[in-house]
Image (cartoon, rainbow over all chains, first blue to last red; front, side, top):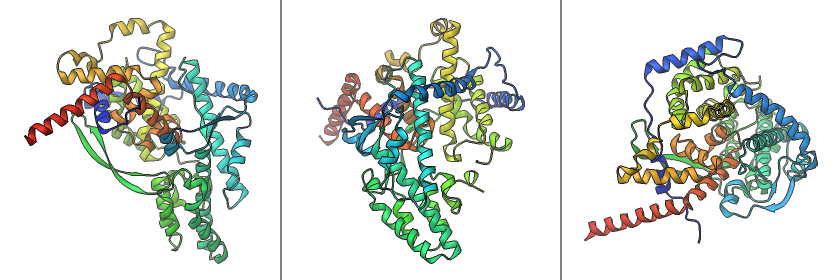
Length: 289
Length: 186
């Protein structure tokens, strides 16, 4: 029998199954804030009122140790699994391609091989993009190890080559947007023309169209339960993973760096190191000075 | 490196999100909500140099709260207190009302189906439907990429929709709606 699709009814039922909880009173809010300020003021780990606070600080130590051990142990594994993402909905959401085990010792090699056709303006930009994905892979390895330690057998993380390529394509677009901004600011006509051409070709890159041929915005509805327990429909703007890309490509015809950076700031994530000449592409606190 | 959060900014973040955080830990059965939530903001302060963008910080706090609750659970297991604590904890109100009204019964069926899901799937659904996180926020809360978060959400939704009791509930609801429409038209 086919699995039924997820509908608004399912969403509403889950929203309504939330256990009712009392609203926090101002006295409680002030009480918790005092605990926070005590912790912020104290350089050493604070004690809980009733128990010793190991908390996430201890978890972070375990996480680091475990991560190092895990990456070492992973030396025996290869990343390529030979399995492919065949579920249509998973393909729509995460991209097509082979499932990749982030624990593999050859993960970096596989990643570089998979993204070889994606153009970057410099080797440095390419290396930053690769390092960013390696960091996510490392976190996934740690997450799996922690789950395994908790006895949770469902926590198997696999990357999909289509998703890895899409991540790299996003980083490449950020890099080209930065090159465009630098060239536009300095009056480098040839550099600007090259970067503009690349940004306007990017919506057709296979690494982009494989995961998002549509590149579009739409209005959707969801069920929302407010603090008084009332559930209602709310409209929100949804968008496909690369919906922002045509906006960037169009803005590249002009000379306004804000217009090029804004869609990336609002709808995606640029690695700050890739956009030092286009600060409008990242939140103020993440900009590279 | 990002500009670190200042103390006034921490307080602003706290005032904007603490009600949601307290509700979050209470809905997940925290034995000590005030201390757990204080711990979350203390971690935010320790990591003030690498917090995500402001619009994603509420989701990041949820992800951190989940880790704090897990650490607390592990600690209580190690202390041998979890069994005694569970015995004393009041029954989940969502399930407790299931025998009272038909609406309560529906909630009980869904809560039981959620309990049958793997823990990872359950939390993904709760984050989206209880805490109203968008897919991008879900990715931040889980510490994964947006594409991975969307796949996990899809997988969790599919698992719950396939639960026989949820399936019967939704089909019955659809049937009732058709009958109501027919009655209105008659």
